[in-house]
Image 1 (cartoon, helix red, strand yellow):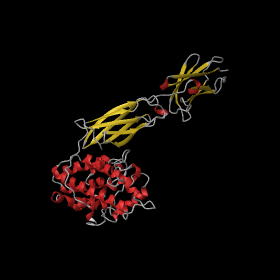
Image 2 (cartoon, rainbow, N blue to C red):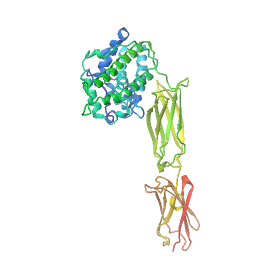
Image 3 (cartoon, helix red, strand yellow):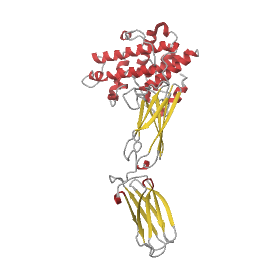
Image 4 (tube, rainbow, N blue to C red):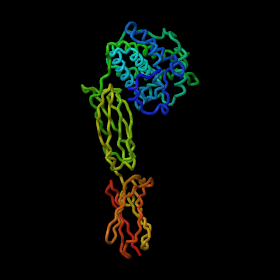
Length: 442
């Protein structure tokens, strides 16, 4: 099937498809694409519930698209909505697809709108699987997969077990992104009870009354919620608000080595209301090169990431840029932090030595500087400037401490004066700390 949603994929693609694991949730009816499984079953039930308001949907097109998000190489984090971390992008994915479906419908392209609906339904119903909404589910990969396959056995044909869906009154969609987040929170709350229904071997079977009841509740909720969304697309309601501002700040602007300073970005709409489920890309311009992390804002509109400070960061002012994006709009904010240099006191923090205190003229002399922090640990990546003060001139040479905290500098002293003491000082640039050693040529 031709992918017609190239713009969305281009925006969300973080890594090449070959590098991204498939993020399966409910069954797709086989893993070769375009089969009939739980995702299709829920959407078909939803279109049926929508009645006359769902007649615009090209069901064949929509059903063929329900498995696309598992194969397009997009960010696996879009398939979940856990309490924290990176696996919580479903509200963002749903809101982006919903907006584009509304636009496609307005343009008279119901085929494209149907395809987008099929993709949207995948992300929406993914998080109604409690394994995709609860951090507590982490590490239960095998049970997770087997549970989905067990459910798929009951939903792999059109109309199969349709009595599981209990129709409720339509609920107008006000903000589809918030609606998605609320659905994920609901499913998350059922995870403990779902796991409690496992058999003696730890497996979740549909023969368990509690597992069956929770599964039916989630599938029915998904079908009814999607029916609301199906109804919203022709009338253009429920499009999520876009970010008008984002404010980035640090938990500390002067972290120490080994610390994990957190950068937070608060996203708000044009009315100053915090926005949940907005994509926030953080770029930290580190001395070693830029580092990028993608997160999603929480119920307070806040997205967070952190960076572990190493010696090479010390003394450098590091710029952090946060870009919030949703609905084709973006907002940017910048903050900075400067890791402290915590060199130990005295020779315990900075010690210099010379390879030969009475070298012959024309020989090579090596000077070493050892830099340690207040705990006695070596500090790597610090710039050290060595100043060689000869009788008539001074020579400066830069070096960088290695993983053992050692910086080295060697020179041929053929120009030195016999019997005249040469003083070599080592200065740790970012800390303005000095230490000296010397030698007397013979």
